[in-house]
Image (cartoon, rainbow over all chains, first blue to last red; front, side, top):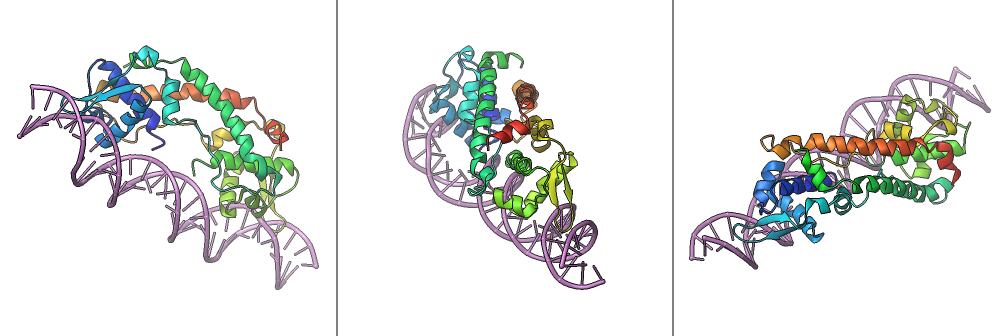
Length: 135
Length: 135
DNA sequence: TAATATTGTAACCTTATTTATTACAGTATG
DNA sequence: CATACTGTAATAAATAAGGTTACAATATTA
């Protein structure tokens, strides 16, 4: 899953913010997302691995935020879902005998790193609390 | 073609910058990219449609920059290749009966638009001339 | 003017990636 | 102990991306 990960995780976190201190089941979350519960659980595992949520197995189990929404910013969410925003690479290895082909990926990396830094610094200023307020 | 478009176009434009005032064939360009010449021609058509390059059919034909590399900035290239950088959406329509589901896409749009504006203003400051200098 | 090198473009094929489904073991609750 | 959950693997289906073939159109040059 690449394209939807960030959006799905943010949706889940927003739901959890609205129902703070309650365990929400993957079925409930899935019905808001209109997504298969197994996919929701997979995303939740990722959120769990990064200590953003906790979940409880068994009857009346589910998932809950692990910290206050004011302590979670959107850059954290981006980092654990997409890692880096890619603006794309040509899939094939460019010709190493061509001066451009040889260096293009390094140059793109540098450019993309700069762009990512800027994106991150913007997302860092936005907390889940703020994002959730508009719903 | 989504992921590679920006990188491929930038690679082509960089080559054209290095060989300014020469018509380069799609075969030559393809061998630097290690890509099928037909794909190169497809990308070139896009660059042509946006007046960044001109091309000439027939023997000794090929493609050449339509303007000085100092007059082309990377935001223009981004706009004609990816239009907008997407951070992803859940593929399904979220549940409109859920307050979060109903509004999530609008909220994501706003967020993504802000991020794109910032990316654009950064890329606008970078010309093809500058980008090509490091090869 | 004929051979050649090139672009332009459509149709189609292949592969990779994403998303969805099924199945079931494990676990906590009441 | 029945039930309602999570966790997770295996696999299938759908979609997207990239690659290939084929050939018409065009300009060059010998």
